[in-house]
Amino acid sequence: MKDNMRPPAVLKDLSVFFTRKGFSVYMVGGAVRDFFLRREAEDLDIATDATPEQVISMFRKVIPTGIEHGTVTILFKGKKIECTTFRTEKGYSDSRHPDSISFSSSVEEDLSRRDFTMNAIAVRLPDGKIVDPFGGRQAIKDRIIKTVGNPVERFAEDGLRPVRCVRFASQTGFSVDGPTLESIPVCLSATANVSMERIRDEFIKILLSPKPSTALRLMEKTGLLELILPEAASCRGVEQLGFHKDDVLDHMLKACDSSDPGNFNVRAAAFFHDIGKPLCQEWSPEKERYTFYNHEKKSAEITGKIMNRLRFSRKTIQDVCHLIEMHMFHYEPSWSDAAVRRFTVKAGIESIPDLFRLRAADSAATSGCGPDGVYRSPEGMLLRELEKRIKKEVDANAALSVKDLAVNGSDLMKAGIPAGPLMGKILDELFATVLSDPGSNKKDRLLKIADAFYRKLSEK
Ligand code: ATP
Ligand code: MG
Image (tube, rainbow, N blue to C red):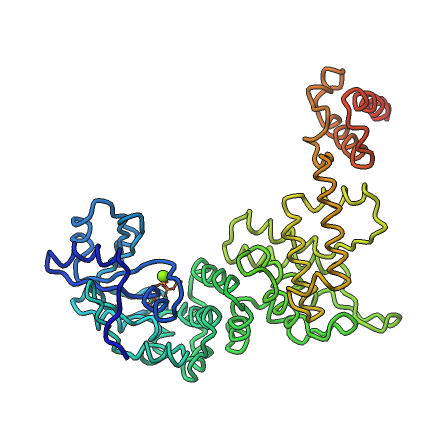
């Protein structure tokens, strides 16, 4: 194995500021791992024996992002570089935070507090000398994830590490070393202590990884799924003969893997889309199969609770739940153009692309044809057709919201209709009329119709 690597130019340039003052500085963490994985690094981390105050004094633009942990962010040549002072951590009596952090002058000591061997490699700047006391490069070569030191101790210190472990497995496709994996169930009480925000950030990375089911299956095997997402764990063994050969959990995992890798909302909706099925399962003797009436509503409701618990933003929760609630639409070529417009309004024009992505992932999981083949299947062809018909309506400037009507509230007021709930009702009626008959979206016609509605409604 080589003892040297060529560091990124920006870090070489940055390191001069440290070395000319007699400090040592190393590239560390994910960027080093990703270099050996030949993956583009998301962010650059460095570690040094300079204290945070000394680092702040050396640069013009420094943000004290986590100064209590010795971390500051340096803005240098258009990049954000996280700089942490070498440290050791002692005692984690709450499984979340070290009781005390002391700065250290040794890079080896700093590497020994890191979670996995592949994350515990340092590269000295500017010369690129590699420091790898725990065999991190070998682990990367062997495609193995392994804790630095005793796994039970390391997981008990910080209960987020087991979740990071399965997340890295999903991102890299590496196997988890036997003793490391076996220690996860032993340390579940430590994971139970971790803040939901930290778990959420890992969950996002899991769902955005190439194959989320890798992490989610490892979570199931180790008890993390039951701990963090018990509603998903209870989908195991829920049969849906007549619809799918898979049980509900396997189907959700396949749908998630089949959905767009870069799109969090679709990935989350695909994973959770049937999570309400266990509560809606009923055996139908006539049909001789299980039915799951209204499961999309129940699934959206449970997903809302889970995502709230994981402290997702209200907007993200709303968007994901909306996709789930709408995922059972049933298009037939006999739909009139008005039916296509009504569907578009109900789904929300801005949600339609994601809704189709979700349905494609659901079909790919059911048919086993994979995301690329799905549009050639009979269901896929129907989806394509509906997509085209929606596009035709949009291109024809069909009114798809009350705002697109040729009249607004002040036009109605001028015509003698008072503001208030009745006016809201009239606008809704006008919109329903225009959805059925786009030709009626003309000011004079709508004012006449509004007047007739107003008379009818005020007579009641
Ligand atoms: P990515 O940025 O791709 O999510 P990363 O490995 O860079 O992955 P970060 O959370 O950015 O992860 O952390 C940077 C480094 O800090 C890690 O590589 C690891 O060495 C160390 N580290 C992060 N979190 C922990 C933890 N909970 N316990 C021990 N070491 C950790
Ligand atoms: Mg990182």
